Amino acid sequence: MRSREATLLVLILIVGGLALWIDFAPDNRWLSRDVSTRLGLDLQGGTQVLLKSRDPNVLSEDMQTAETIISNRVNGLGVSEAIVQRSGSDRLIVELPGVTNPDQAIETLRSTGKLEFIDTQGQPLQEGARVRTSGNPSPSSIQSTQGLSGTSAISPTEATGPIYNSITDGKDLNSSAVQPPQVSNQPGRAGFAVPFAFLGASATKLEQFSSQNIGKPMCIVLDGVVFSCPTIQATLVGGSGEITTGTRADAERIYNQLKYGALPVTFDIESSRTVSATLGQDSVQASIIAGAVGLIVVALFMLLYYRLPGLLATVALLIYTAISFALYRLIPITLTLAGIAGFILSIGLAVDANVLIFARLKEELRRGKSLRAAVEAGFDEAWPAIRDSNASTLITSAILFIFGNSFGVSIIKGFALTLGLGILVSLFTAITVTRTFLRLIVPLRLAQNPWMYEIDEAPGLEGQREALA
Image (cartoon, rainbow, N blue to C red; front, side, top):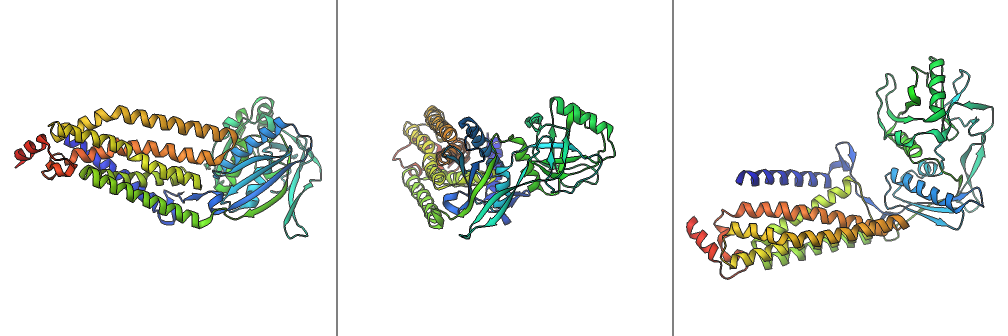
């Protein structure tokens, strides 16, 4: 028994230490990963983009599909709590909190995600050049012009020049084969690679063309722009291969464009502007103060009413807070004011299990049980109530999350996510952390004093204290 508690204590200390390291990681990095706190548009501002369909008579079903694809792309950019919503019959409003490179985000949102391999008759093309292909004869690019009001107006320009024959058709791209960026292992091609694969006729054509043109260039075109013209080194068996870039940011952009499919609607950027925080730093500070006050009040209640177990529960609550905040940064979860409210609410819910356990513990001590037996009985008898209450809250959180996801209500999603995650972490701290602490204090003489449990008489404690003396 003591060996098991010692092992659990070491595990708790490791998990708590890692959580604190992530919470206060130097330069907001942990294991080469960005773990900075992400705030929503209401707390830190960001970019708002208005997309307009080129076809004024676009079908409602196509706009709905485009809205879903753009939402997926936004999430792929690492921007959670973003808002993508319809405006009229042919427009989409996209709000991106904390976006530091609006131009790149705009290109990712607007691009169709059409990947082509073209035959240039052995002649390499300049990277970045906009070309016409048999599969995309009229590609357009985004150009920004300065309007009279001082804001940027963005208009498309058409590509000119010869039409190159497409070896592949973008619709044959197997999106399930498009994998997240990984470090390239190709000789002489340092950087990051995005694996891909084509299906059907495109896969057959790509395999045949690569086998017949080894040593010659074959240009890769993404949305009408030449990405690269690598020399064919080997046959692309089954029409699969990888696109290599020099930076992870470029690789992630390409991955998002390919993974989430081609847009069924061609959009122009009608407007793009930077918006300020709707609530601002004052709300963040007020939320932090509210969370701190909540923690202090809950800790005082536990200490005054449950004393020694309350002290242990307070320590467990601090561990809970550290782990929850670390998970928010690690996942990551973008915090809006609603998400912060869910976190603060979960702090109160986190002590519910401890209240049930400690109330039962006091009853068992009054009945004359030893401290060890009372501790075990307290957890065993309280567990059904803890399980059912937390399960009902998790079900409610899941319903809210599904509702928010289905109707695009990101505020509800943020609240449900932080609340649900808080419930899961609180179960760990109540059942594992608090229980381990209580089991470790059982042999201590100080723990045999009835005053430590806010009760007048406890025959089991008196007998055990005399035995320890």
